[in-house]
Image 1 (cartoon, chains in turn purple, green):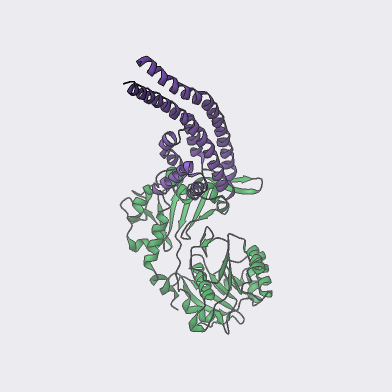
Image 2: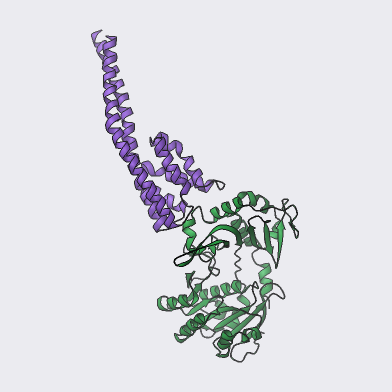
Length: 174
Length: 335
């Protein structure tokens, strides 16, 4: 009986801790993905501003040269543009919003910055495009800083909370 | 002379294919009507014109027509399809592949070449910067010219251009606008480059200066038209500069270029001839007398630079070879 109770306590603590750690990992994931996304934007900038590569090809190059964990979204935008003649670049970015939110763990502000960039991509000459790239890089740097602070604060908090709640439940039950 | 028959017989299916290729660059809302046009009309379409606030039009032969909603053509603008700014914006988005920055250099010349070698003229508001004309904004008109490559159209006249043992005569094609001289020049280049077994003509290195991207229809560094296996092409370059670059870098046997007339072009041609390179080119004109009335070209003719002068018009259809003249004695040699 005692062993069963002990096992049950361990399960509760481990489950609760696991949930806490897993929730905290979302903050890690968001931060890492923001950093990788910035590298992808740098690749895209090279393709657009320096090579003047048309957008579908430029997006594909980002997918090929970037970290596939994140760069696959650029390939998704490219495929969307090629298969939907009636749509424009912004529609392509809208198409990946669910991926940005659920797979890359970006928050509302991150997504809004990316969509805003999508509205201006490809619609002007290289000098103008370079300015838009500078803006998004600056904004993403800001989001990275905010993500680091969130990870330090909330990430630690959820890890601790998970463990404490587990112990709390065990104490309450027994 | 059979050149005009060749123009009409050759590759009907290729013309329809070219038309469908161009439709891929037009707003899908408009192509629903353009797809309805019958194939006997489609084969002859040369241009599709989109003008903001005006009816959709096409050009065939030397006439233009309004496109009606039921897929027929009319000479009066009743019940036709009107173009609006969304059509223009969407079409330009497709032409530029969602990337205006990638065509900004071409826009400075007022046109964009797309896959298939089709050339799309663009007009709107000209924007000037510190270095002069920079770009076009607020696009108001698009002229989609359907590229028409006709292989073999020059086969019957190569015997007048080839000079034994294995070279060519300096040749000038003279024609009024829209009579097929560029199509003919392109095929001549192909034949010179590939060689002709029937004439024991091995083939020569040809350098092409394609200032308006009409000869090669180069798209992303690849000529979309067949201009021969031994041809090097410099695209979107001023003729006089292109000739000098080719002389320095490509050791051509022949240099080909379209529409000479400028003093600098003629000077560059002289440099090429001094270097032992043969020249084949075209000029706007309506016969020898018309050319002789133009001071710069009169000079070139009187110097006997061009050993063969081919006169083209459209009296018996586009590409009619009116005469072939010996450039030395200005006598007809057409047999």
